[in-house]
Image (spheres, one colour):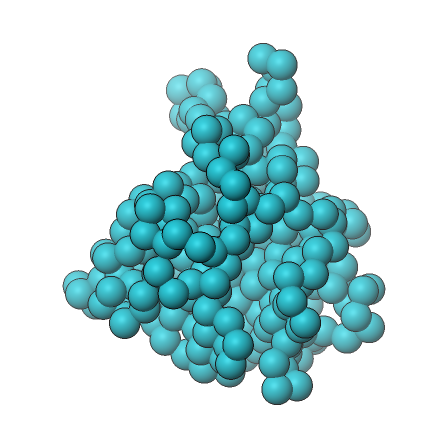
Amino acid sequence: MLIKTLVENTSISKDFGNEHGLSLYIETKKHKILFDVGASELFLQNAKRLDVNIADVGFLVISHGHYDHGGGLKAFLRENNSAIIYIRRQAFDKHYSLRSNGKPAFIGLEENLKQNERIVFTSDDYTVDKGIWLFSNITQKEPRPKSNGGLLTGYNGQTSDDSFMHEQNLVIEEDGKTLLITGCAHNGIINILEHFYTQQGRMPDFVTGGFHLSGRSGGDEDSDTIDRIGKYLADTKSVFYTCHCTGIEPYKRLKSAVGNSISYLPTGSVFTI
């Protein structure tokens, strides 16, 4: 299984543009998959540099309804005329982030794209193909990240704290290995892994994506929380590749607990599992 980071907050070199966002390309023996499309068309530019033909992608998963993961959706639909887009219906709700001036800024997706005939709205547990599935509606055993602070959802002109029912996670199994992909882990990376364990009776072999230990509105998680998460991750015996909303400083702290079993994925990264 091949994974290429098309968009992330940082880059491996000046050859790759970066932005606050996430887009991952995954290639299995059978499928060419895109997980999120970043905040803009930047994923297209980086895809060319990484020899990824977006027109060949068989399906796209949008992890949740924030612009930094789905802002490039219109560009994707323009460049690819056949792929199915798997997304939660709630992803097209109104989503906001409180700014420093106390006013909410819209951070959602373009609502008019909701009507596209290639969009499939997923259920809490949704099978894409043999060995590939999506899950959401995470049980909250642990508190959600404090860095979710200031993230809101809107309904009938009113806003409330986001419940993150619009967030989903992707699982891919191939050659006896299991990869779990998170977008931002707004529901909490421990909760997501516990949910997976409850369903599967084991931990995934590999986990990649953002863990939301750093937020534009809520700041970084406190050191004690990051240390507790680090210990939990180390105990799973999984291998982690993280990026985006995990944050550089929280990542460094996680690495002190998880060691060589965790790595960071800047834009332009390529790895196989």
